[in-house]
Image 1 (tube, rainbow, N blue to C red):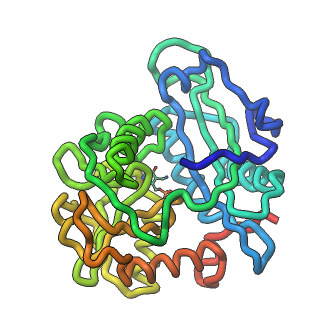
Image 2: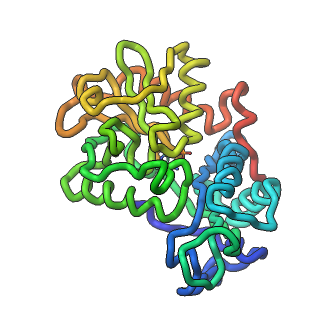
Image 3: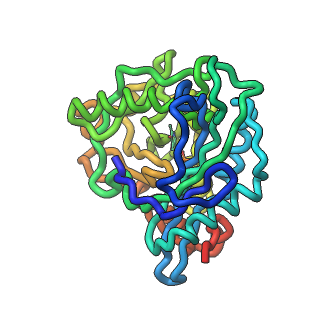
Length: 309
Ligand code: PMP
């Protein structure tokens, strides 16, 4: 779990205010019913540019505002306002290291009853310092969870909703209590979905496989980045298709990816070592390219990085 070192300023109720004053009521709809929607966006410190580069800010804001439709959310802030608020908060934080930006759109009305339509929504946002969220070097020991991934017709995983993270918390807690680093969710049909807060890729015979956007996953920005980098930089074939549990035991390489997780190799699944337990060559290569790209070092993808200062 990441410790919180917040920037001094938060965005709350249309204003920039001291973070400790950004508070909601116990009666807030979102607190009572989990009706919040959020994003997690990373900014990387580039020593070369002495700047913080926010990674794929547009794509995060795009996913965020598209999902407003699912949760019937309307707020006064525009797409461009949300981008500006994210940048401004990093600027005001004064941090010269890795940051994580958390915009949340939430049902802010003090009202009773689990409904969405006609309940007022508001935007808030804060920034914290963030280094590694999970180990990206040694390889993670993961377990298939006994908890099933939320299904699209129950609570859609496509929406990064605050309430959905109860599902993630149950799986991550079970895995950690049993001595694993992370969990892998299966869907109700028994095929693979994703990790508790990250997407998953499998390498088999030199090809890259990941579960499709219809597999009860959050369609990750990092996932999309990895797919594009694998095709364009490594010349790999990338296949989106359902993945069966036991494919995870017999594949060549496995890794998680996400804004928090970045690109994190997996070394064992349900105590079955993958190969020799060392991160595989394709995972390593993708990881190298990914870290270069997020630090603005690859001109072809420099447009994915927004300079803060
Ligand atoms: N799945 C879940 C459940 C997540 O919480 C995250 C983290 N946001 C991801 C996947 C990865 O998404 P992204 O790459 O957009 O951060």
